[in-house]
Amino acid sequence: MDFNMSEEHEAVQDAARDFAQNVLLAGVIERDNDQKFDRTLIKKMGDLGFLSMMVKPEYGGGGMDTISYVIAMEEISKVDASAAVIMSVNNSLVCWGIQAYGTEEQKKKYLTRLSSGDEIGAFCLSEPEAGSDATSQHTTAEDMGDHYLLNGTKNWITNGNSSEICLVMAQTHPEKGHKGINVLIVEKGSPGFMVGRKEDKMGIRASDTHTLMFTDVKVPKENRIGEDGFGFKFAMTVLNGGRIGIAAQALGIAAGAFELSLKYAQERKTFGRPISDHQAIQFKLAEMATRIEAARLLVYKAARLKDQGKNYIQAAAMAKLFASDVAMWVTTEAVQVHGGYGYVKEYHVERMMRDAKITQIYEGTSEIQKLVIARELLK
Ligand code: CAA
Image (cartoon, rainbow, N blue to C red):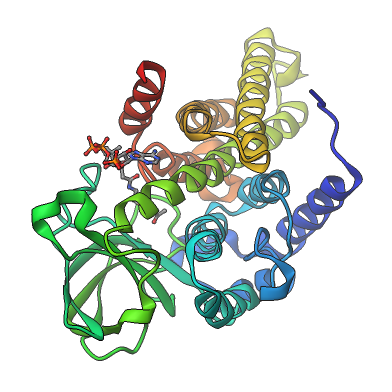
């Protein structure tokens, strides 16, 4: 067991911190206010290699390990959780899924585009009646011989309007239940593919979340990932890794709110002393730091297991369950430490509190994580 970072990991951390503090921080409040998805920032993230960290170099990626990815996710999430979720979906759901299970042609065709920042990906599993109950897919992919005919609606899709490449789960053989589901690569601009309503969200407002509609969209057979009926297993397997990314996002939101609180507590004076001299504040800081450190260990453990090729289902679910609760708790305390200033936008922590909430919901709610953990324990 080694608690030290390698030189490469330190370099990744420095690069991500530099990008977050010097590029993302300016404008983060405005982007949140205006719900502005900033394409130029996404392109910069691609240029710096943050959109395809685990993709092999021959497909345009960084060829890095999962630890590097969570380190970068933490630093970026400390400042801008919206940029972090765009990055997370592209890295762990879309790129990782294609790299792990795609054909050579699919990897060559899509991974380079997804790595550059010129194009980004979306992961389309959720539906109006299939959120936690993901096996109940109503979207259909009818087998027409050389292509599938895709019909249905997907909800709450991160990067919904901005993505060029979508991984869409759809039912081909309803009689087979979840074993009849396929995953198809669907390109924006395909006739019958429409972007619907944009969600007006509580947090991560600078990422665009939309409903997507598919009406008789023709998807070539070669765009199916894996064998016929592999789609649900694909979604579940990819989400195991995605949950490590979201756990790292939650960790970063918590750590960012903590860093601001630590600084503020030493600057703000009450009763003639910095508030950090008051035990009430010291206890808050101590508990925030302890919970964050515990979350970090769980996130790193899950990432390490994944890099070692071991089973990380339980570890990923535990990391997400715990880190998302830590994010919610720490950001709420951060607002409290900041007092009235914490309740206004200028001081960032109110945004972080709003951003934290989604980490308990997407890529499997906290209740689903408990289900996953319990099932692994009882196997
Ligand atoms: N890893 C690998 N395989 C898994 C798995 C996991 N974590 N969980 C389930 N499976 C497999 C099972 O082994 C089973 O396969 P077999 O039939 O071959 O044995 C199959 O999936 C069905 O599993 P269950 O019988 O357990 O099905 P269930 O309906 O009882 O439970 C569930 C399934 C675990 C609740 C699943 O529906 C689930 O994870 N729901 C949450 C969905 C989710 O996380 N959605 C996130 C949306 S994407 C998103 O948020 C992205 C974004 O934009 C940020």
